Length: 145
Image 1 (cartoon, rainbow, N blue to C red):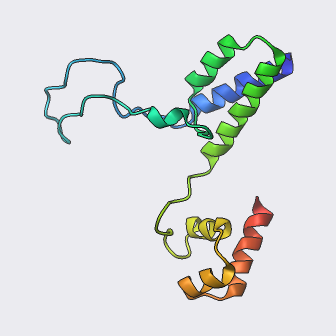
Image 2 (image 1 turned 180 degrees about the vertical axis):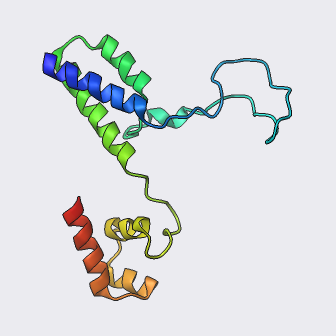
């Protein structure tokens, strides 16, 4: 248990070091009256309604600290550790853009091609490349992952 607890604390520290810049204060302070460059900041703060969806992997360090304070059993700590590691893994990869594919030939485009559920022939016709090139991208991606 102590080893898992140590690893969990390390994972929480790594999550807290990730870039999490707040866009607005969550406090219910009075509206801003200064007119700096960019104008006034809208009231309301950050919308966190989607943070608690099932499968949402990007959780904050504060979330893990609260859960650790309530964890009483070794099993709870182990589950929290796996959740923290999944969050760290999710932070390493940018989400795949939805809708239009990224710019042709870019690393994000190659990742989009590799993870696309579409057939290789259909992708080849869409982007005017050969099926072999699509297969090569998918093979390279699987070897790297």
